[in-house]
Length: 98
Image (cartoon, rainbow, N blue to C red; front, side):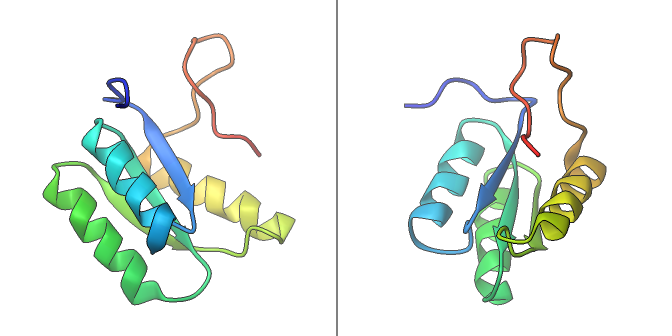
């Protein structure tokens, strides 16, 4: 069981299907807002977001190939704009890694 993640933002790569989808939904169930990263299958990413939103959490789908550094930079920037910035290193909160 996950701790209370209210106020946190999770970025799940491959969150559009399978284990990634299950993780994204579980994080939302624990209170996190979730960015669902996908490379292909946008419809499945949107379905995952709909499941998350049904739990009362915010969710966005962001297309990016995480094997390409520039796309990862854009992915993280999009998540920060849409769902909130990374926590500072001194806040005691988890951080999105670049």
